Length: 258
Image (cartoon, rainbow, N blue to C red; front, side):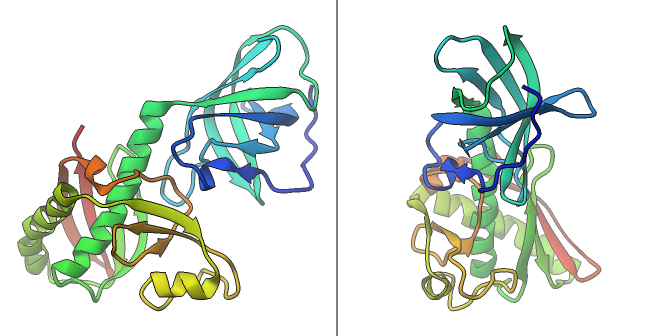
């Protein structure tokens, strides 16, 4: 099948509601080959997290549930206008794919867990920044990739003060990890979400919308579309490797243990 029709309805994001689910059934809607030679599959629903929000995409594979006539290796996943594109290569295929066939999605468990831990650790640092007296810094964005994760804040702090706070921040994070606490994710009304997030939401969340909020234990939540651990204790040993401030932005670089 070489059909690049864009579905009329957005892809159903199964991971949005169940982040522990690593296998699921779906229906093939479209398949096409891109200019780089890789194929793309569009499904009616997915458990694959697409790259975005500072988090890399899931990887894994997709197979035919009825006759095992193909195996598609998912190398990258992207979302555009609500449609999720699964990019990769066919490891095995015996015939043209037909729209409407049922497929089985399998997410790489080790990579999903690593991505979820790195993303959750970034949220934990937001909590700890408040605890070490850096509450005046406004969370901006994060980069939760294994090659150099960091969280970024609007506002600056004298570099000498940052250096003095680095060890304190790391100790605070590991203290909360040792205590543990449930990590929950759910969709709320705008007003409910505002209350959970300390009384207000970022400007990029449209008023009247129903944002997805992640909460670490009893601490205030924040809007997030990524995947996360189920308990703070899963983050193991956190290292704050560097803190620096430049041009109105403060960055905190971190890593997590195995």
